[in-house]
Length: 337
Ligand code: ADE
Ligand code: ZN
Image (cartoon, rainbow, N blue to C red; front, side):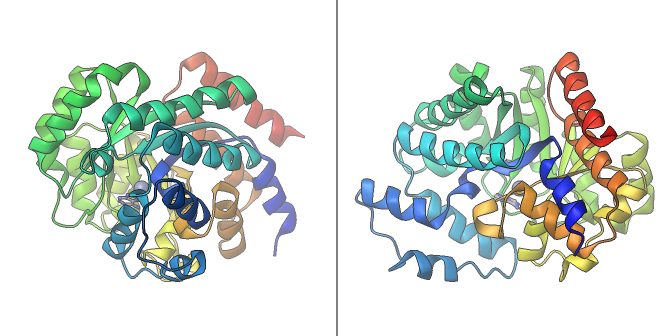
């Protein structure tokens, strides 16, 4: 095991760009919130819930992930969940974080949009005040629902638009291609939101292309299936299109059988703007530094790869150019030591 390299990865300044905040709900907090809100869970204990985290594909995970999110009822619940994640991120030397949230999971249960966004946003503001951590919220549309429902959600979001930096697309990928959401994404673009979409996680590389061409996204979440299309890979490299890759997630959801087989280093060496992220850390075995440790252990990662990954995380972030330069200088100063 390369402990020196893992130590470098742990200590280096980094940004996280692909974290579903509902996916940071640890079983302990699920049980605490269930008790606080008098909700009866399907699992008798924390251990029994954790034992159910044996996924065979994306859908088998999403079923349990949406069930876990049902304990979130009040603004304080959303605050507590987000604050717990931010403390972990801060401990992992994450200086900037962009959080996905899934409002439709909550509004469908009668939780008001404002309760969700205000709770998450207040935690992010506190992290900024306490640690100077920067960040933003990206609202995701659930792609297994209709575009009409996405439009309704966008309408609900408008009073809170100052609390969000972008729009994303997540949930069940297969059978729900990006083009299903072309019109609502066009409206989000007109409203000035940054745009991202999950594509090429479980779905085909063609979904990466349509996310770029029809949704005009600025980052692809996952995108690892681009390996099936060399022309697309060249395009992604040429256009410096960031892919927010989630190594532990990809193993847990059987996108790759073993970390040894993960293609992130191949993509990085081919000049793609790869970043490392935790996706749903409470479900997939770890936060940012756990993901870095896992790739360093399994793949021939070198020091220059870590510097590139740290730089990419800030290059791909939705932050003002002067702040971006400040973070990049911090990365380079760290690696110059
Ligand atoms: N929602 C939460 N995690 C997700 C993932 N890995 N893919 C798609 N939707 C998600
Ligand atoms: Zn994701």
